[in-house]
Image 1 (cartoon, rainbow, N blue to C red):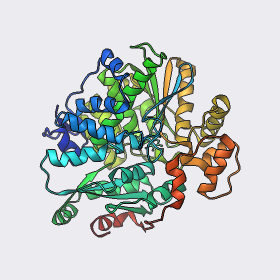
Image 2: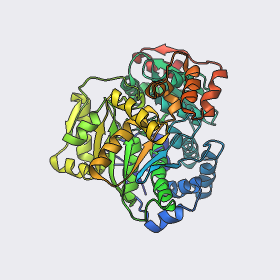
Image 3: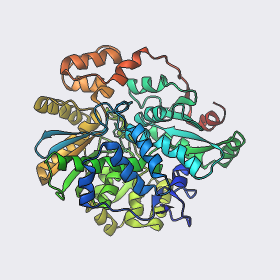
Image 4: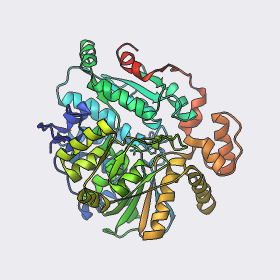
Length: 488
Ligand SMILES: *Cc1c(COP(=O)(O)O)cnc(C)c1O
């Protein structure tokens, strides 16, 4: 298996090289040139294995140039009980046919850990496999969760340096605290005056800037990305869809081969796209339902075929989904429309802010994807409703998804898996107010209040933050990001 650019560049590279590079030289994203398959019997066999062996099996199919034993050892370290208390990706049953996939048991209490606990090893191994002499300099633009999860994953890793940019008003207090207190000699964090798209565009510009690359090369560094555009971020996310299905079969909730619909709270389209790959491999997923908040650009795209970012940007209580450019959508376009059309659409997106796929292409997309969105009041209401009905506390992102999932299920029936992407304690103030608590204190008092109202345990990585020293406070303009990378 080789990797190719979504925009048609005439180049085929190995998986290690794709992970090392992050992004193709023509601005495209790397994709495998063929997708591996998985049989029902293999899925059934995976159900008997611990999560790390499921991960090593699936990842191995996408990373043929990685040594199997090393990959298995790296997966074992990444998905240990120490890192993921209570298991890496457990399925919680709300009631018959209504399940939650909990992806928030990692060190930062959000789903980005699922990829970012293993990604640093994949990158570090890629330097050896490709005979790279320089050290990797990771740049991350984050709307909150990626930044902290990347910092946790890369901190004090050999031959790697990492810098994280986040929108100064676009993340929660707790997320800010998590990033500002990050330990590690190779890490730094910088806020920018702007929104997530400004941060992401700034990072993209730096990646495309030859002068910056030359300057860094003199320092023995080359740029790499931990954003979900890197294949090394995406591949580990395929695992938990297959894992969840295997668990549902093992729990006796599904018979092998039964169809399962999946709803995903979506921002950059990375998580749901990994579900699509699992489906293409042969996992019996019926529909993939894309859930958005008030920034419902994907709902519009999936229902009309026009992607148009010329619209108002909203800050919501589910900030990790406050996004107007969903980068990984490019990978879906590539699979459905081919590289030529993808390059055209991306050029149009960058010059006019929009593009429209053909009727045929839209029909092919709609054969797999459905979409829905919620407003802020509905998001709050769903948190309360879910807690009252099931005694189960969900965060704001999960709430968007569960609302869309239940609407879909009410109309179409079928078993539904809703992907839960963050601990409710990560967005404690909004969750607390949704369940009727009064919040009047700082972010730590809010945790205690939420616990006293709901009885749900505070995850240890959040409770422990209070004692940690604040190390990073810098705020800069987006236009100064390049300078920050070179000299900050
Ligand atoms: C990143 C994130 C999302 C969105 O995932 P994408 O892969 O960007 O679509 C949803 N919820 C939470 C809590 C996140 O951190």
